[in-house]
Image (cartoon, rainbow, N blue to C red; front, side):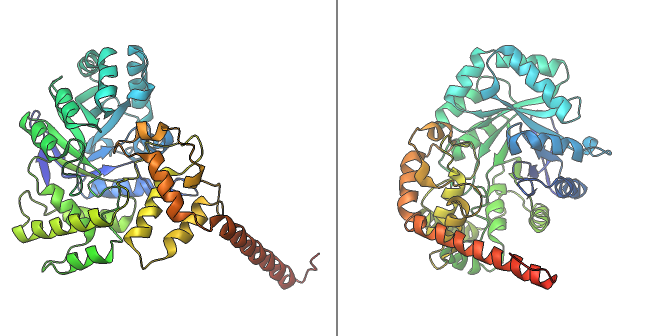
Amino acid sequence: MLYRTIPKTGDRLSILGFGCMRLPEKSGKIDEERAIRQIRHAIDSGVNYFDTAPAYHFGKSEQILGRALLDGYREKVRIATKLPHWEVRTASDMDRILSRQLVTLQTDHIDYYLLHSMSKESWEKMAKLGVLAFLDRAKSEGKITNAGFSFHGTITAFKVIVDAYDWQFCQIQYNFLDENNQAGTEGLRYAAGKNLAVIIMEPLRGGNLAGPVPDEVQKIWDEAPEKRSAAEWGLCWVWDHPEVTVVLSGMNDEAHIDENIRVAGSALPQSLTPDDLARIGRVKETYRRLMKVGCTGCGYCMPCPAGVDIPGCFSLYNAHHLFPKDRSAKFHYFGRHGGLIGDVSYAGLCRQCGKCAKACPQHLPIPQLMKDVKADMEGGMRVAVPALKGGLWCMNKASKIRASFSRGKSHD
């Protein structure tokens, strides 16, 4: 495991950080035993930075991380969690939330404490409520060690926030498709120039750059003399920037964790060759041509008042266009969102209220895009879903009849 240093403190952090936003699930809930096993394996392999937040997994992520860090593991890591500005209405709310987080995480201090999802509007709100005085007080009381912020806004707002306080670090979205989005490369260099450590989120755009990748993209990767997975290419591109301190990965699969740990053992800054960078540039242009919606699957747009699974719909909409030879995306759309399995959550339910667009860190015009998803993905759904449901009912009924006869019982 390679490590990089926080400029203002000298603290050494693993270049791979464990993002606890997408922990493994079972039956709709965090698979606690597996998640704890994965977290401890990562620590044993040298990962020492763990990022969570009250909003992740509807409040359960902090709980699981706190339990995973028992039995001596807390002393081996740095915990990063966040102050949710949408829960703050008065100055006293900040102290109340932090106190709750310390209990939930089963610790007496937070190593890296962030103001969650800052933009121009959220920053102005928090500044008026006295957040800087709160951070000073929390540091003086030993409740937090380092203060920072995560960001989803314009480069202009980013610079204003960077200059407003003596931050130790910040967290931005950055990958080879987002060089000019939000803070982007300009923000990365600006923050590093102020001696802030820079933590990177969404290095693979919510996993969309990791695979399976479109045939056109895979062909470009396959032409490289040094074979790397799509995930390795994406992570190495971010780590190639010397201004980057830690890259967060929302790891929830053992094979992916081991791959990321392996790559983090050799990903030195400025180690990609000109040919490597040119290849990534070709991939970037191919993705931009093929991708319909730049959704990272972060879930900030949820829950939808009308019941639409916005990230889920976008994911399958993108898959439908990125993989034209694979016709399963539309079938999965019918199954997941049309009511075949679980509740209906398709794009056509959208009421155009606009709540999602205001919450979207990518500033996507979600209501308009929902119309596009509906037009592309829902043709024939109202006929197909009842037919598929009927087929499933018949299969289930037949299975029960066979089981009944196999037990020697009559069936009525």
